Length: 536
Image 1 (cartoon, rainbow, N blue to C red):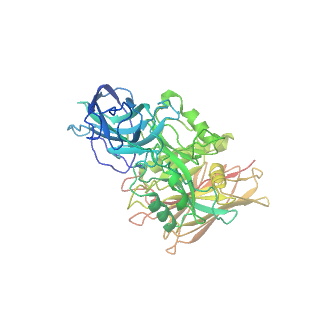
Image 2 (image 1 turned 90 degrees about the horizontal axis):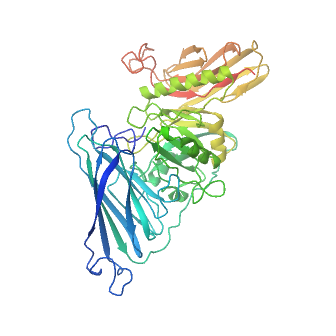
Image 3 (image 1 turned 45 degrees about the vertical axis):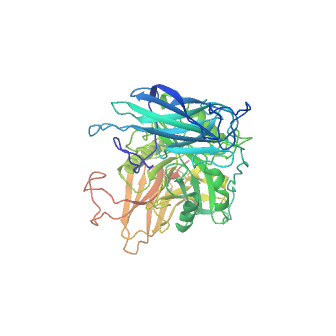
């Protein structure tokens, strides 16, 4: 899951970056200019723009109350001649009783092109991870987009997703630094192809964070960690910003495909936009580097953004749908989803819930002939010691390219591994045909079907074969961690078959009982597959 601040705390924890609440009002005051500036801090003696090297600061203050709108857009008039715009903010954190949300306020900025939902004005978002940032033509603080600081009405956006009963008082300082704009920033986007092995199984982590949102690893460190973990591809999914996309070019290579993406953190759940096209404009002619997040399920706009991602060839994937923290749990339904993240980071009870919910949807789809939703798993790693690639998704792709990897994920030709030490193969054979994970074995209802699951890398683990009727076969692996399970069925008895591989319980027993108590029914997940569908 995401780095998340527990209710009533100021620290950053394991599960997410969110936004919410609103302003009662704000005031604006101009602070002193640097000595080189004219006396009024705005005009030089000649009547032009302020002298190079001078500064002017505007201070915005206000108070937020509970129950107000989710986002507050504070207008700021940017004068001509600004080389760099810098913002610093703070807010009060009054003591609250145990169990009562304290103050937490996120921040971002939009330029003179406006704050329209999905519009071009976005210039950056850092959530609650930073207290200050700066933007110029040549560079910007991670999370923010370099580019011209044009004159006009900009907006600082506050996202106070938790407000204490006492209210939240904020202070925003916007400093204009005058001078030549400097050279233009030149992004280096990653190539859409790496040196693959043709049609093969490729390992990748589709949910990773860097210093461009609430991660503590640089893109360089993430790329190095992915290579050390034995991954073939990664997707960059910083929260609500595309600012890292232009830095991945030198870090990709023949051995590592880097796919741009975003974690869209709405007020009613998070979703992964996998395979966004970096650059300006909307697809298919241009890029779709950023996806807006400023909405709730009741606003009815999620389908719009899902379609825009899909138009550019990307995937829409609800992330950690049963995350227990505020604004993390998924509330949009799955009609617009291309896959669902059922395993996020270390295996926990909310992953068990996501798996159960996904399997129930799979049963309905398999029995009713509807569309089934593939499962994926990712590390959601933010910083050490969270390991990159634990878990990751192993996808059968025609080659190691953006489009082929996304096509494999979309088709469900994939399984999830807790580490690269785990190897797995699941096939079904009948009527002279063979089908693998994510495929359909077209056989008559009563034709015999032999299902074969082979696994290595899970010492003393438990193999499980699961159908629309539930678990129908289980075996224990030896200490070597390698074994094969063979089971015969028919399409009339099983609409699909999928596999789970569990680590042993801490006490070594198979166990029974509730999912997170001392009687854990199975050990933590080591691997799980998408289904092989049976029948016509």
